[in-house]
Image (cartoon, rainbow, N blue to C red):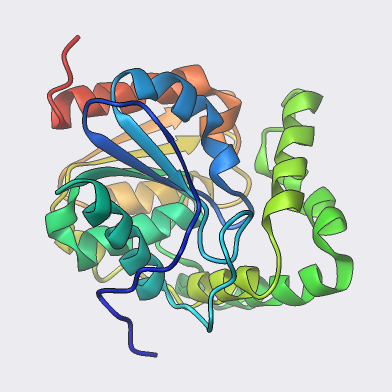
Length: 266
């Protein structure tokens, strides 16, 4: 499909903060803006935090047709243009893949990147791509609640509190539906960003939960190693959703990154 640089879907966002740089948060493939509740609550003292719900997720309307990775990047670009000249972009998992494509496709809009528990895309491995494409069928067969109950617990560390596990499952069950999830899964399955990572000029913070069982440390290290201006952090005692499982440590690293890249005062 031909991506449109002026693609502007109607998407729901949650916003907090009235001063400072714009921090755009892009959620993972099984989530929504609810995943960024800890960032909206704490980082909004320093930045204008905007957390989107991707087209076809949660409160955002279903897209009119299939979307590719470029379309999601263009939709994020439109949100930035509506609010500021540039943004610091925080992407978790699938959101990190979108953020990386955004920085490659619209470099003038991205002041910096924070890429958490992500990868260069499932298209880097045939088996991973096949598994990603199979998820839409699984969702159709099980329904959102059973689908979330099967997948949610793996997104946090084995020792995560039950309350967090329930919150992750509830968020996924309330966020995913067809056809939006299928379009997202296909965009992830087709993505292989390895060749374009070295061209990303934005200063980048790469974080990964120490116990990430989904994308894993190796995938995050590959991102950090390919981008020229990077810092790499392992978040202890966290799984794939490090921003939710260890929000204090995660937010401290993001704030440190913003102090450097956006000159936020102490």
